[in-house]
Length: 503
Image (tube, rainbow, N blue to C red; front, side, top):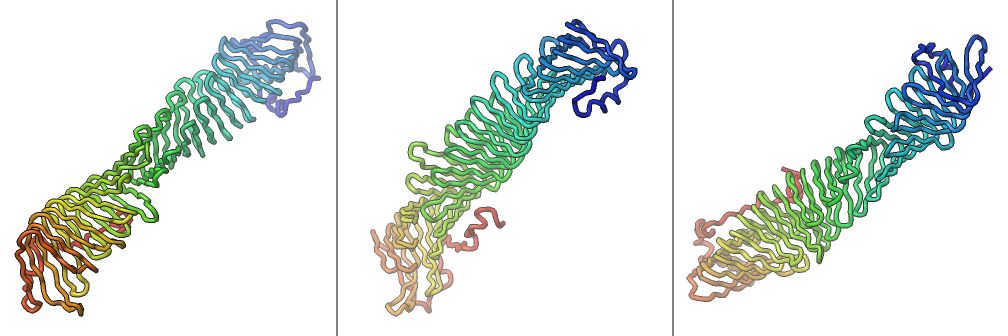
């Protein structure tokens, strides 16, 4: 009496129906053949036999064939050859002829086709469907990749692999680890689920769901994903990356961090071109640039960043609806350019700037020159207008002209204003006891005004000035303001508004 040592085989045998004659596994050759009848069950004991079934050949040192159930138990040098494409080898085989299911196990069980080899300790191979599976650690090797996992399925017809648990794909160009991987060996696309990491010589990509092409190195992630390399990180809710160029495209809460100069771009959608060192971001876009211990924030409909790889400096450009916020000044305009190489910020298209030191500046264009992270000078061109709030007399000192150079001292306090062309000023004069003695209205082509605590302490003129001092009791309301005066302090951006945290 022959008793199977394979767990659960007796239960499987009991459920298998008697084979039809045309489905019975055929013996092609053997060194020895012994017919056995135990309890009315006919079996064959085959030594060094070769079986054929549905176009497949089965080899083993010893096999027991149950005639009524069409099941074969085989031991020693087991081999299955299916056509000219698939070969399975191992130590033990259980083959269920009626369903064409082969279970091959051993210290080294191997499935080979023309281009790849799967090695594990136990393979279940459904020969009718061409699907092989394993539930113990396995290793698949082809011309380009080595792939390991705890469990896996391989469709020999479609050349599709599905891997589960501790999945690792190693290629000479990259390494991919994940929890679940579907790999199409013909298209070279890998689809993954769970914590995934792709590493190559240029950096890493981390995500939880997406696809990756092992040939083109393209990847697309559907959930929150981060690309990290030596120069930047790019994080987004969905992300596409070209692994060859390391260019990336992100959508949804995009964050691009330039590591060398601590510049961070945020927005709804963003692009990064690594070789060019160029980024573009839009939709609730803003940038943070950390200089010394202060941070400059710029908000715009669209932001561009250009990196100079030679010295790691950067040029930032913002277009449309620009807000700027820094601890010592704030502003808005329709176009802005900031170059970290020379610490120069240029404002275009109706720029206006404010400071916590109670001044406001407007012009057709404004250029701010920073020294040690503080404003040193501002150049205003075209319809230039400077307003300072005199908190003592609770009025506004004003200067306007064609071109204005404004100089600042430590703490961003206005120190000097040079006017060149069509100069006009309206400022309040006070005596030594800080008593208001009147309003000075002066017109002169060129003038030089010195300030202290937002008050005019001295003024000089080049050319012939036309001016008058109006005593406080005789100042008319219309005389308090130069033409074009508009104190717009309520429009001054806050930090929260600049980063879209408030409307």
